[in-house]
Length: 205
Image (cartoon, rainbow, N blue to C red; front, side, top):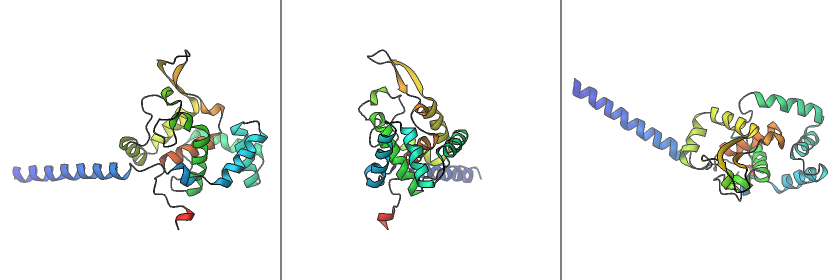
């Protein structure tokens, strides 16, 4: 009887290890490549609005969304404020959201995080220790819980620092991107970050 219990426990342990291994393997492929997701037309349109707003990314985004939706900028700004209060409002399998998030990430984030979100951007040395979003542990955390994205939203929105000083006397860390981006832009960038590299787009069909 005891031998049977030990065998059952051993089998269960093996199954758990296999399950975790499969999850890690399945979560290690994202995010979708920027070059595949970003559309030239979107880049052109966003740059046009950036030029019109003297490089103000948040104002440019609201103007673009107003042009797309027919809603006023004030209405969109009020709706955007609500997006700071909950979980990611976008689906990581929504191609539109992933495309727009890729554009936001490339425009506002690659200087530190790199084009592959591995922390190897020109200013990557300013990042905190958990900067490689392509490793299997990060991919598994993203896949298993949306709470990670909510935590990252607040870190990106509010900024965070470390006690490591840079040569210019500043402290390494994440600037408060709420001073530059809308809440929607931050969520979209995180949605791209949570996406899988194998996400299907219209051109794949």
